[in-house]
Length: 159
Image (cartoon, rainbow, N blue to C red):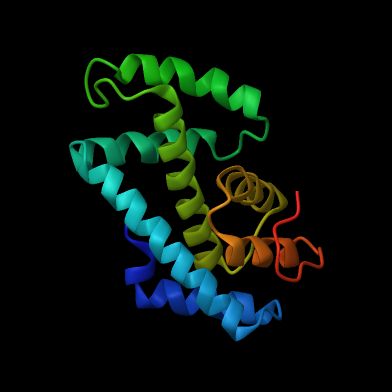
């Protein structure tokens, strides 16, 4: 996946979209920094394994799972795929680590999609909120997601 934050056009598009949603400049800047860290993390775990192969696997799985809204259904799809890959691309990677990486890849893809299309579907918003909530690593982006959802969030995670 193209690193989101190294692409000036994507940054500009995401900035434009969020400003149109009345998100403050400071919050946008902080969220873009978090997204940059997310992109770096995705690149890091891709580098640990044959990058192009693993990236392709994540991209294919993301395409197939992007519309799955229930976690149980997602796991029913992902676990057999993980088992198939155990002997090759992902070697001895535990399922929880694989799932973590897949969700972060998916989050980055959804952010890029939102920036490019200048819209966010209810399904994408729900998925992004679930992922950010689960890993609690992007408090500024969490606030933006809450604002996009119509929630009033000041300076804290709310679950």
